Amino acid sequence: MRLGIYFNLSDYIKDNVNHGENLTALQKAGASLFAGAFGSFVGNPFDLALVRMQSDSTLPLAERRNYTNVFNAFSRIVSEEGILACWNGSLPTMLRAMSLNVAMLVSYDETKERLNAYLGKDANPTVVLFAASMVSAVATSTCSLPFDNLKTKLQKMKKGPDGQFPYKGIVDCAVKTAANEGITGFWAGLPTYYFRVGPHAIITLCAADYLRKRML
Image (cartoon, rainbow, N blue to C red; front, top):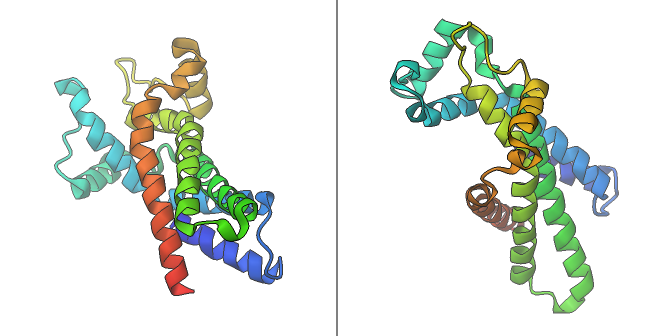
């Protein structure tokens, strides 16, 4: 959804606002921020179920939720915590998606346009596409990991013996993460995260570019 919104919004701005000219970096950032926020808000319930089911095995037996499948997860979240609980962690999820979208799409489009302008007629479309997606993969993983860190902590948290959650919100989570783990704690696991997000960004961008050319 976030990619579809971005590409359609970009095409609209290019054709109707810029009269055929490429988008400015600011326009690309605005389109990617909107697409990331809206798409992630709609998809938050699925992300919540995913995070909880993946982290369940790391919890002590007495604290596990033991969802049997995604449908069981949704039904229990709604019945035990209320429908609005499906959007727990939606703010950090949206912030992560916004940072991911900006880093991935703006860096990709800017790199591709600059390489094409620099190389001119000698530009190999395949090489330019791959180089731009590689730059985008690094930018995406580096910029989005801090928000992914906070999002995961908020979505998987459970009430302690005192009946209180360990974090009151995204700001409290960020402050406690910095205090307990240091600033570098926001980028804990960056190499692993890159190998998760990097290939996703490369494959997604290359596939999207190919499909857009076929449809135009």
